[in-house]
Length: 253
Ligand code: NAD
Image 1: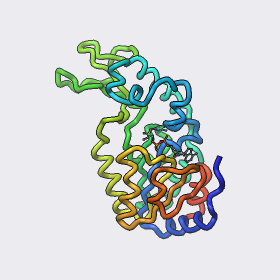
Image 2: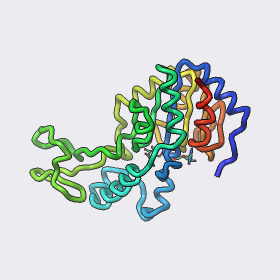
Image 3: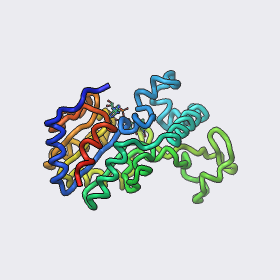
């Protein structure tokens, strides 16, 4: 798939990571690819290729055909539950544990692979695919539990008909403010930013590398292919997450 990363670049990034007091890691869908979870683009070439992202990942698309969107997410949930963290997820969490206070991990992924690899404090910019929430606030002002909704595709409130929806951020929606602020703070304060497996096409996450670079951080990208933010990087390591992250991190005590 990818050529091996340049050994000199690998050594340079490793040296900066070794010296860093704060490391910010931003991951995207490519981080989970080797665990068997398709990236956004791959997902759209598969079973669901007849739908576009606006239909599958927007409130408008959900309202237009709730069952179709619910079923698509149900299928993705099965894939996430079956997937296992790979050596790259494990290397990141182990590095974080070996160097307390150094690592902040920010992900655009809606799976839970970083958490299951041992880094539960991962900042999630785009939500959690395994979580349910109501489509709109309860009209009666109650704190109703989506887990108690009447079964269906999607489940609905038996009293008011409110739909349950997956707890992800859809196109056109705001990112969770606390997560975005934490990610911005980490980009501003880090000595090294490592960007793994993102196309750099989805904002505002795509802007974090530029924020870090302007604040003085060294920026490195891990991706087997070109991304839209390669120009922000001091180093581009052409390789996969499961290959490059252990090579970068496992020898750092
Ligand atoms: P993207 O699909 O736009 O880009 C994926 C990137 O990963 C590409 O640049 C690709 O070259 C790279 N890549 C592929 N295989 C890789 C590997 N083995 N190692 C490292 N990199 C690899 O994904 P994105 O930039 O994260 O943006 C899409 C949005 O879709 C995300 O914000 C996310 O919320 C959502 N999404 C999440 C998941 C998930 O949670 N696992 C999966 C698909 C999409």
